[in-house]
Length: 314
Image 1 (cartoon, helix red, strand yellow):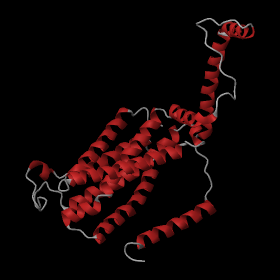
Image 2 (cartoon, helix red, strand yellow):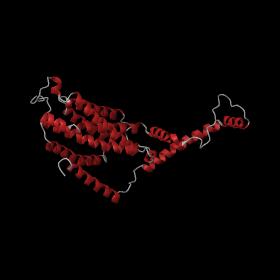
Image 3 (cartoon, helix red, strand yellow):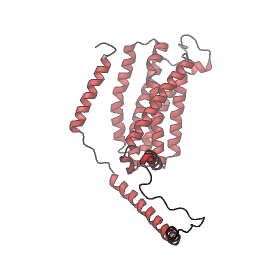
Image 4 (cartoon, one colour):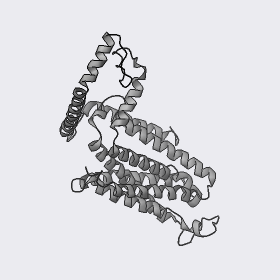
């Protein structure tokens, strides 16, 4: 065990303990409002079936003509559709495509918004956190201990803040909490934009002493505001997603949990690729190249939340 492997062993032990505790104590909770949501979906399905039955009755005469044509070897009229093939004739080879089509049909606008917010959140956090070591080393000459301390303090504050946001959800709607958290996160990312590099000629000391330059204290403040608020934003996204996700996505291979995991992984991968791209493009301007787009993404999320305020009223 050394400084490189110690963190891995420590996290492996924590995850092992968590796995054991889940196996012993975890029970699947009953989702609030699930029975009501199933009843509403059943009513909609029954209504759709009634409409389908009515349409079939209206087409009864044409169906009889089709049956007569089959047994009398007569040709069907050109405007009549052929009878579907009997069950069993079609192979199950395209069952995967049917499952994907089923999921796509079930993903309505509120679910799409939540998944888009989740992607934006993961992408922004990845851009913020993964570049911390390289960014602080180049700009401020920080060592591993200082970077680790910053991550530890922010990580420690995230849990109490998320609990506090959960407490506030008893008094405020989720969409209101989303507005607050995204606004704070946008302000935190705005503090990380170095306007001295945009307004003047960059220097080798990163414009140290310039009133618009991002000094270490400003960096820590912006980092703290952005990280904690955007991380808590994920909890509110999950709350809304659990209320708008169709009950049909609670089972099967492509369920809501897998969809969220795929979006989360995609956002994290895109964030890492983005860091690599902008770092290769201009390491000197790494801060602005990362945080100007990240701040823009959060502002777009804020505008979207405001624009779809009624859709998110759950």
